[in-house]
Image (cartoon, helix red, strand yellow):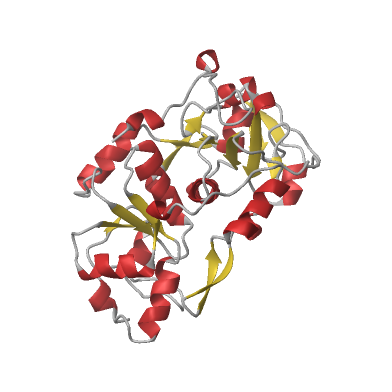
Length: 330
């Protein structure tokens, strides 16, 4: 394990080092706080995946509560941030003759996508969620995972997102800044962080060989609620860590927990945080949040995300490759 990856660094401890290419700044860890980001705004590419484009461009609203100014509507953006359209982050892909939705784009398509956001090769990147809920965090973690899959390491998530930025007293910009196309390039795929259907099937057929972590709400894990193309219930031997356990409400924002708290959750679930893991959900979004915690915060280098998740798994089940009987997958 390498818990040092999880460092929320205050402004007084900003880390300057020789980065890739011509960039002088390396992010200090996988998570940074608003003060650090404010001190380094001129040296990072800020990608905000928070709410819709309308909210991105409008001003936040405040009210006075017991003599204190508080945020009542989280809106606007971190100065200089580029708006990331969540609907464009994932695409339909042909996987072994099956059309699977909400998958990671091809290398070429994703490179074009990131360049259009103005990101340069080796540049420090901070991804900003809205910061109001666990679902905001998992979207940011999904973008992070995709960028890492295609080779980018110099990046972090903003703890508590835009909500925490505003609560810390920093200003938000309105409007939509134009992006100058960057020269970011995607590397060869990092297969060590993506699980295939074959790998998941092998793990499901041999419970205990790999830690299968189900990142969905408990009702979906238990098969009480499922979507039409998904196998009800969960994979054999899978442990459930629902998304609400990944962040906590800390005043006006949903912030990360200390690494020790995540370790306690894993221990309670009898999960060995040093063993190989595969995270999954319905479509690979919630799984990204759990992957981020296990890989980037707890430092397990053997964590894979199953991009197709239960959506793809259910397609094989419909063909008889797996039983769709909930009793078989509980």
